[in-house]
Image 1 (cartoon, rainbow, N blue to C red):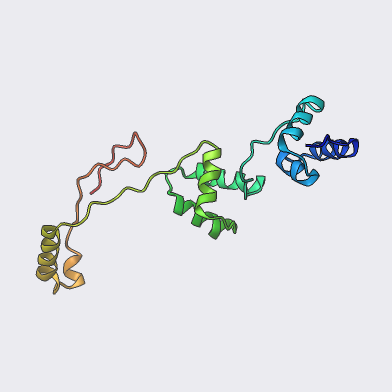
Image 2: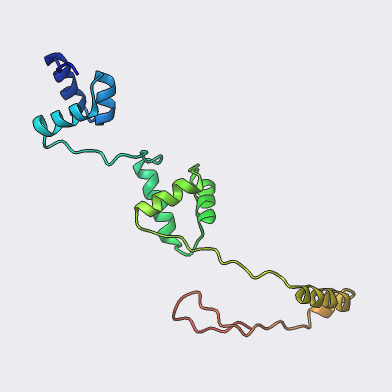
Length: 163
């Protein structure tokens, strides 16, 4: 390769000082990336090197809004948070961008639990229940007390029983 001229050298340094990446500078000045990297290390050792990768698609204030929305209700799923951002704040971001933003902030989503599939016996029991009670009037249902004896822990120290 031909040696780099003083004019190219100055252009390389100007572009590096402007914050451009080694790849961009090499392409713009028609030199190799190794040459640009060598000049950056020798002549501008204090310049920070970008981490690379695709830049964030959300600006700083919007990113903070995403993080605060999740921190206010950490029990939400990814889809719920994305919908909240769109409906309440007008932030149109896809689920992947929201996930990446929270990952960068070292936050996680609650994973949606998969419900077990209904078995044939479950379906049969439901049909039997419907056939038996389909003719009941609303007044008759008013005298029925539905009770579930599961322990609900929305918050870790809650000991309230449903019923």
